[in-house]
Image (cartoon, rainbow, N blue to C red; front, side, top):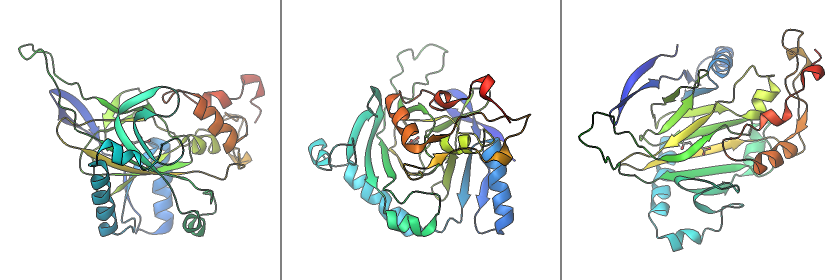
Length: 288
Ligand SMILES: O=C(O)CCC(=O)C(=O)O
């Protein structure tokens, strides 16, 4: 069950959300049911006993800190982030910015293809995000109003792919948007992975699973480091809802499209824009 508990962030009380935590070492059908429930209710959940050895994650985190501690000139030698490389503050190609620096990697397609039939064996994206500490300058110290000016590291967005696997160090900052539009912080847990539904999975399930909007704020005195793997299908994959998920009560919400088409549309929009909106059926097209 999901419970919200108050967290104090620089004077302002926000409700932190306890996302469902799913133990992947459990019995398979039970794990599947829990994942479905979490995808329907929150679109976001944590997994433990994921099988990725702790020492590999720790090594990855150390190497990441070493990289981001280098000078700007050194970091730029990794190449530009327009394909795979280093980016700083600019997110995407349409003017979005945030207090974040990042490294984009190619994943090992062969290794992924060995494990999944759905996820593309085209190179997919792996991203390291570093949010340097941003001290909070509180101008009105004498005022009774709360001093809560955490900077936006990574602005509000949903992920376009099928799903994302996100891991962070023990520094909070991730927030998700609930149905009512309220933003709630997610408690960091470096031993778990967060999994979130992406836009494609929302379309493939006719809106049954939700692609949740999320953002990351900077911490005032500690670095947040997150790593995200974005699981996407092959470029020519046709994204369509299976007929059994379409009923007179729940007519098809989205018209079929290819991942290439969706990606192109996503790249032309701002980070926070709704991309699925472009692929929604008109009411008179919605036949069950
Ligand atoms: O750093 C985080 O927790 C969020 C990162 C994120 O949303 C992204 O890389 O798309």
